[in-house]
Each structure stands twice: as structure tokens, then as C-alpha cells.
Length: 351
Ligand SMILES: [Zn+2]
Image (cartoon, rainbow, N blue to C red):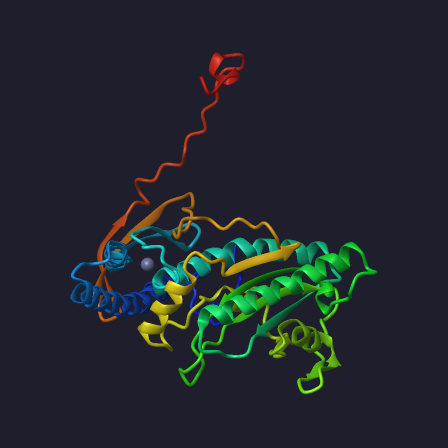
């Protein structure tokens, strides 16, 4: 169960928002999906003109994205007073499609919120911190992303080695008991360069020291110095906590999507997809490692009577309700079947 304020939910589509808010959020995302789909249609036309044939893979992708989120089925569970998205036709391309990205973010948040709560309640000495790790902007996304990923992996490996054997090189990351992180790959504000960076929620025994470094001499201390030594060109690291923000709101900042769909041109989103499709842009370590994120972009249904709403995408960022069926009168609680002890089915139910 997620307990976060609506503001903290950011752009994610979470089950404890009202039905109106959820449909509204997905409507805005579908509008962006339509813009992206139109861009892909132009790519297909261009390819056909240049090469005399269409790229089958891109055509397939276009078909999937075009129909994505064109209809949604929600159930409002009367006794729980909660909404669940129980059916929809998602494309699953969360680097290209904002509708799928906000569903994926919501699923991650659902999965991690429980683990974060559990670890924090079991270990009173831990406190949550939001850490942002950046590399210097650059023209080539692939090169900048690889640089960030390799450098970050080295920092994680130093932490692991130091925790296993404290005589090994110290790192401020050793204060992290567990963390969940995601890569974000937007264009820089001027639209010229790529600005890949990492957002991380870290549960720490002590706040990691940011410190500082003089890039001219390499002199300094703390994470800034460590990061500069590893990357050779970057030292921007931020560690912060807003006292008014609860830990799940902090987690929302990490679970938001990898590309800035509305702030950049579709051509840039397309380039990021082509460069990074299939790469792992999300991960965790320490006590937050190994949390399973459901494959499905739908919510798990609840028990109990419900009213079902079906929405169809109308255009311009709007859905229209096409049906409302009240199943609460016809709902029957699942029967619990008890078998006589010693019966064959009781002993071997799989027969
Ligand atoms: Zn989609």
C-alpha cells in the first residue's frame, strides 16, 4: 500500500489517486504518445523514400505505439474505496511512450515502497538520502552514458570491497546500507548536449560527505573527490533530504521516467530509445537488492464488489467514458471449498 501525497506522486499513475486524476494523467501521456507516434510515421516515410522499403521493426513498433492506451478499464472497489487499472492495451515501450513510462514507474514504486518501509523499520539507525550523480554534458549520448555507467559501477564495487574488508580503500558510499537508483538521459537545457545522470534513494548509516574538489589540481575530499578521481572530468554530486518529504515521496523522484518526454523534441526521445533500448536503466544494491517488479503494467485486482469503467481515447489528451457497469450487486465472494479429510483430492489436489 502506497501512502504518499498527490504532489509527491509526481507524474506517476498511482492506485490511491482518484479515478479522475488517473484518467487525466494517462490522457496527457497518451497525447505525448500520439506526438511520438506521428514522429515515427515520418521516420517510416523517410526510410521508404530513401531506401524504397520500410523497416519492418519500426513499422511494428509504430503499430504497437499507435494502439497503446487507446482504451482503459478501471474498477472502483466500493468497500476499499480504491481504483485499479485492470485492463488496457499497453505497448510496453517505456523509453518512447509516456503512458507506459508512468505505469512502469508506478509499478516500481509499489514494489520498492514495501521494501524501503521494511528496511527502515527493522534498522532504526538508517536515514534516507537522495543522491544525484552527474557526468559532464556531451554531444554523444552513447559515450556519455557508458562513461556514467562504468564510473558508477566502479563506485559500487569500491563500496562492496570496503564493506567486505575495511582495510580496502574507503568510499563515502560505504555509509549506504541499501539503495535504489535510475538513470535519466535528458537533453541539456540548451538542447545542444546530453545530460545523463543518476537519481538514487539511499538508506544510510550516516550522510555521505559530498566534500569538494579542485578540478585544476585534483585536491579535495569526499564524494566529489572520489567521483573526480574515477571519471577524470566530473565532480557534480548532490546529497540532500527535504525534512517535509516522506521517504516514499523521495522514492517517487527516483521512479520517474528516464526521458523528459515533454521537455525535449521527439527526435531526441527517438535517439535516446535507439541508443539505450535494452540497457538496464534501473537497479538497486545492498538491502534494497532483489525486489521483484511485476512485468504487467496493470494493477493487481482486489477482492470485493466493484463498479467497472471503460474509457476510450478521444484525442487532445482526453478520454471519454464509454461504459459504467455496476457489478457490486452481482458480486459473490469466492467460495472456500473444504474437502472431507482423507479424501483423494485433499491428499493430492493436483491429481
Ligand atoms: Zn505505450
